[in-house]
Length: 164
Image (cartoon, rainbow, N blue to C red):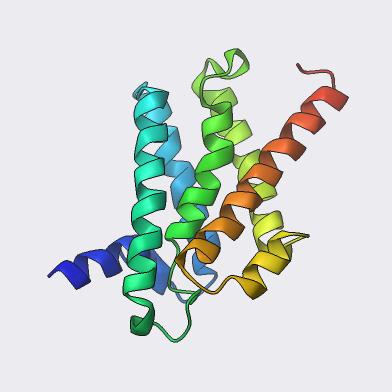
């Protein structure tokens, strides 16, 4: 029971078993979850705490269940996409610019595309982490960095376009 539950966590309740682009599917669903959370005005501190716990727990269960997958960063494992995509979503969650749902949806999908870009192409040092750190921490860290890169580029675009 414990192992099945943890496998459900790692695959985001089966999203990782998607036939096509499971990482993109998981990131997209993460965006939809945040849109719903924004609409219901869930406190950002609760979200940050929850994502932090999921990050730490995922590292633990990735290492514990590494033999349940063909490789440590198997395509079925998409909880790392959830955590990585959460970083740019949390960064825009409480901004004054996004005080209505329409703006939040627009910027949610902007950071979705940025995150997928960095997660797929893995610029330095994401590519090094992806290749060298073959444990639960490495699986999670490359997506966390892709999320951080997304935040940086998103806000640079805003500064250049004089939105901030």
